[in-house]
Amino acid sequence: QVQPVESGGGLVQPGGSLRLSCATSESILTLTAMGWYRQAPGKQREFVALITNGGGEKYVNSVKDRFTVSRDSAKSTVYLQMNNLKPEDTGVYYCNSARISGTPLFDSWGQGTQVTVSS
Image 1: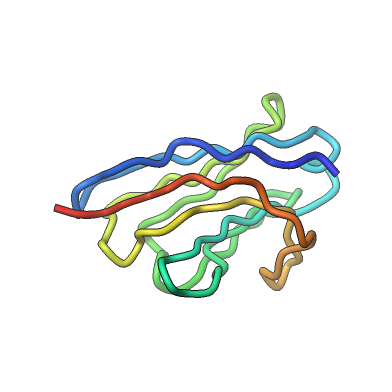
Image 2: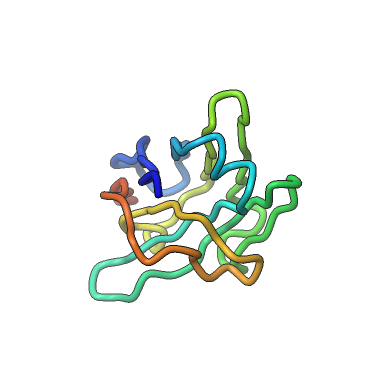
């Protein structure tokens, strides 16, 4: 299993935007849906969004109309465009292969990328 590599996090003010990237392998991107997950301090990791290998999208209600997941097959990369960020979006963001339900497919995780939304 190739470990995905997340990047693009940072510190942003409420209302700001960030784009996260998840670099993975061509085979993984072809065969599985890819999900984004986040873990806020003191909380369990939760599902945020996924994109299927056919391009279908799914979001948790709290990020609908603010976040957009996309993929670039040529670069074997999945993106998460996050707009109108809120303090409650703060956390470490991870990507992983995902089931259509949103549950992660694999038990292992990369290092993630920290997103902090604060004024």
